[in-house]
Amino acid sequence: MNIDLHTHGKLAKKTDFSMEYFLSMAREAKENDLQAIALTEHFNTRNFFDMMDQLDREFEYRGDYYLVNGLKVFSGMEVDVAEIGHILLIGNRADIRELRGQLEPYSGKETFIPFKELLDRTENYDMLRIGAHPMRESTPLTHHDPIELQRLDALDINAKDLFQYGFGMADEVRRFAELLGLPACAGSDSHQPLQFGSVVNQLQENCTTASQIRDEIRAGRYSVEISPCLNVKVKAAQMMKELLKKSMVLA
Image (cartoon, rainbow, N blue to C red; front, top):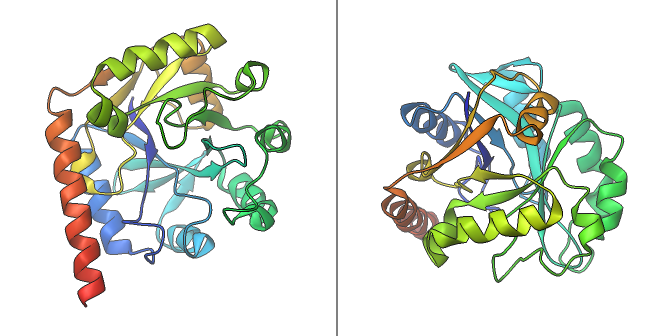
């Protein structure tokens, strides 16, 4: 199963969720030979629950995913932590909803949840927990306590970082992950359809739950594919994103 484990369903945090835009994301994902994506929208995005409500109304939910025109869309979110850093949480929609409700007091920049507390709160949920873009200069994870980092399931080889820092960043993330005894998996971090296919996880099994994905990654039954067109895909996506944001402001 080809899956992208770090994606967004909205153009930006401050925009409303658009079903039309989301469906264009799903179409592009399928056109790039993805069978599945994890929808890890920012937990403090505008109207997070409205996005989930719309998905609930429009699509069948099986296991831990929405079936969107043949594409598996696993439910999740991306959470900021107080000490700086982002954590991807992927699991059943009921658990994502419940945890998001718990995080409401922590949704502002001055009140983000401490990393250890987030790990403690998610310990009893059957979730896949990934350290997002762990070596990005603006939101690194390298300064966190290694003992706490080892509680994660994997680290994120992020397409935006490969574009910004070079493909060697993938090896740096893998080395950091190896020091922690963790695997490294891939996420496009796409807010715009053109970015899909820049990186892909090829799982040996066809998974229906986040725990199955977690087990495949932990067991090493997957490979990470980095597209030779990554730089073009990410640059084009970033340019299109900025143009769309400007057009919204002008409108």
